[in-house]
Length: 301
Ligand code: SF4
Image (cartoon, rainbow, N blue to C red; front, side):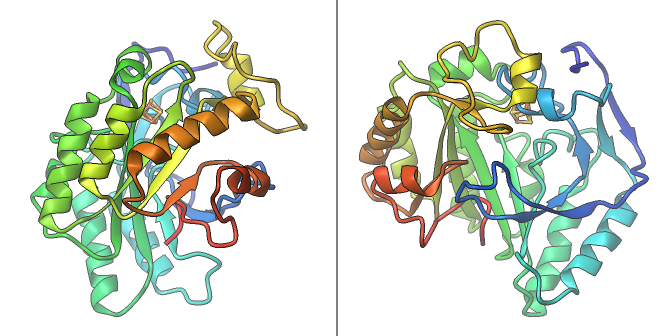
């Protein structure tokens, strides 16, 4: 069962651990593994984005909820920061939810940032990754705080037409970009995900806006869906995608279509910063003119 758009938001205590290592799938992609911070299940933006993969991966969760036992979450974060010899030092707070959308009903991000400020002061490399489609109002807790070198704020953006059609509950793209500019000007580390790009739309304008922002890194992605999402969202959104090429793989646009989208976006970015591809394999990185041996990924340090 997917979450209906009218379902209420809930806060409740999380009973299981907040942090676990997530091995990215499909396994053959260049994507790095990362630690996942399960601060919420679902998203407070309404309606949910049409393509949101949580509709498939959280099909068993009846309601969007943020976990309100924040003190225990912070204790788990402190224990994680104290660990050495980790496979990765990135804690991603945007995998099971938007990182900032629940802030009005369950404030947590300022306290999280302070844990990572302490980590930075102690010389730890452990890094919090916030991923959001929020705008200035969702970013207010960050704008009111001092920047922290161990916190990355990654904005997911799209061309305005796709966002208006398929990301209706999230902040407008101009608002997201405004928030990104303000945070960068204040000294925060800012990354951009231009993802998922839809075929048939013009990405030059948003790529030019990203170029002007000059984030530290850009990740490009195209519309895709895993088998769970294909089962839940069956109203034609993914009709132009080719079926998954392997069990558990992703339905995607044909390769030529994806490469055209990546090339156009890269041309608009004009080499302003390192670029990576989301959930693509080594051969696709190479075909797009990128080096998978030194990947520049949103979810890596
Ligand atoms: S903002 Fe992200 S988590 Fe929220 S509905 Fe859209 S894709 Fe899903």
